[in-house]
Amino acid sequence: QQPVQSPQAVILREGEDAVINCSSSKALYSVHWYRQKHGEAPVFLMILLKGGEQKGHEKISASFNEKKQQSSLYLTASQLSYSGTYFCGTAQGGSEKLVFGKGTKLTVNP
Amino acid sequence: EAEVAQSPRYKITEKSQAVAFWCDPISGHATLYWYRQILGQGPELLVQFQDESVVDDSQLPKDRFSAERLKGVDSTLKIQPAELGDSAMYLCASSRQGRLGETQYFGPGTRLLVL
Image 1: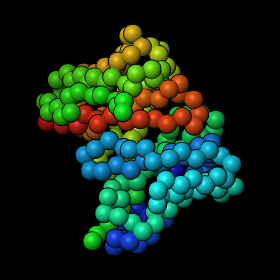
Image 2 (image 1 turned 120 degrees about the vertical axis):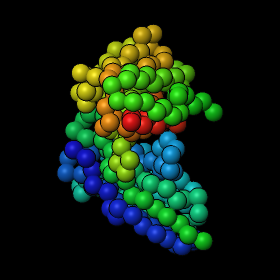
Image 3 (image 1 turned 90 degrees about the vertical axis):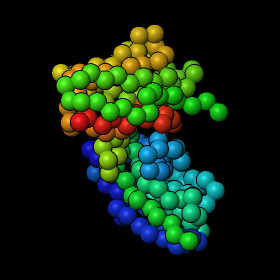
Image 4 (image 1 turned 90 degrees about the horizontal axis):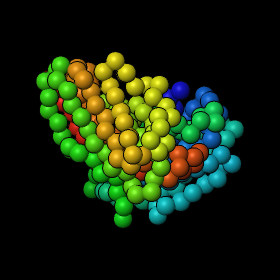
């Protein structure tokens, strides 16, 4: 079952913060976050495993709320290079198969 | 840094023609995935290989699509005959063993346009 990402799109000015959410109606075992720039392959950002952990990657971090079956990606002090479409891929029901959301398009303007 | 290689990067074909895409995963990665990504959507798994064996091809339209990984290394995805609705980006990814929580690394993709 495809996870739901919100918002669908967000426009920021450089230096602003953003939160992207990924929700599932099924029990999640892991959440994988990728960023994809137009015409390019998805680039891996981070994986979160069930357990409610939070991970950080420079100014990008993420959390995993097992009870809510939701993961959130936090982008702080956004840079122009953060522009792109962010996808979450979820492993559900014990399967290692990833099901991706429709993506959140992030635009960072000067 | 090791990368997933794919070719060609772009392919334009007419409907009813045959097309083939090639993928070379990161060295030592046992698991190889083919995804299809329609514009504005997330990647959708078509087929997953563990070494040379198909693990999951439940979303592969088997009447026209075929995939093989004969020696458990590189892989070919074929469409015959191509249809207009096949226009999409075809992404190959690989992971070490395909276990829960492993990172999947994507190649640059092949963008297919069917006229």
